[in-house]
Image 1 (tube, helix red, strand yellow):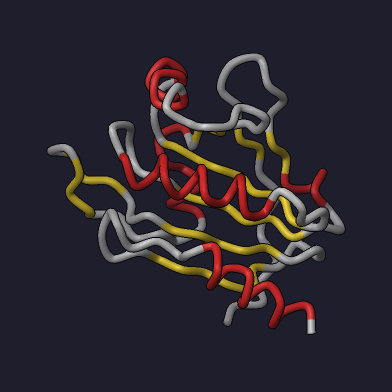
Image 2 (spheres, rainbow, N blue to C red; image 1 turned 30 degrees about the horizontal axis):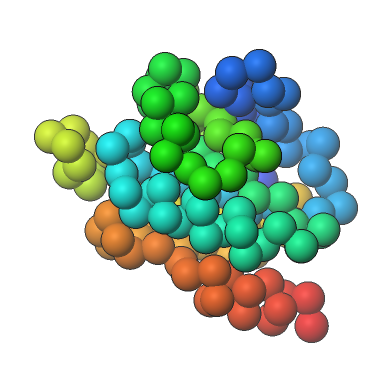
Length: 153
């Protein structure tokens, strides 16, 4: 388990939303959800489940990240059940590269990064990472809650 402090970063939000800045999340856990390119039904389901099941966690910020254009993300987001949260852009997958998320996953005739979840603790250190092996391989909310509980105890 890595205990390395994550370098501060900013992710632009889609639409008129405020960008996400890691240093502004001090004191909270941050779950970075690296989603695949648009047209991903698993990403829709994953995002909907996390938004619904983790809404009561006041000390965790869920950050959903896609490597698409604003227009592509806006079209994709129309399929989400909830719209009370932001989707952020990882332009050219720079953050995924910086955080060492492996690339080379073939999706819609493109090579992209694997789906991933990285959890950063309130001190800004990476404390957990899950890298999916395929589109449907995501950390379930139930397993995420167990990981979080283990870290808090």
